[in-house]
Amino acid sequence: MSKQSALANLLVELSIDPMLRRRFQEDPSTVMNEVGLSDEELELVAGGNPEKIRDYLGGDVTASCFVMFES
Image (cartoon, rainbow, N blue to C red; front, top):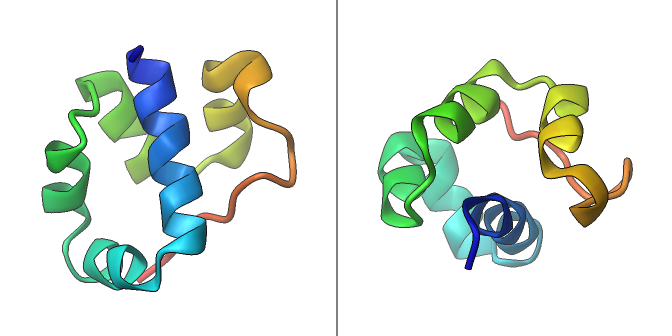
């Protein structure tokens, strides 16, 4: 699995798994490290800019595919 796929999978899982979403909201660093995101991906998620994340993911994601969770 590519790292881009790992990030896309994390975003999908966050949208459908309430327990993972709660864990992510409480401790995003731990969840992101568990799925093996790269330093670049960690920065993208921490930055919270959906357009930059879509650009990074390329054709793997549509504009309405994910929502950023804020604490």
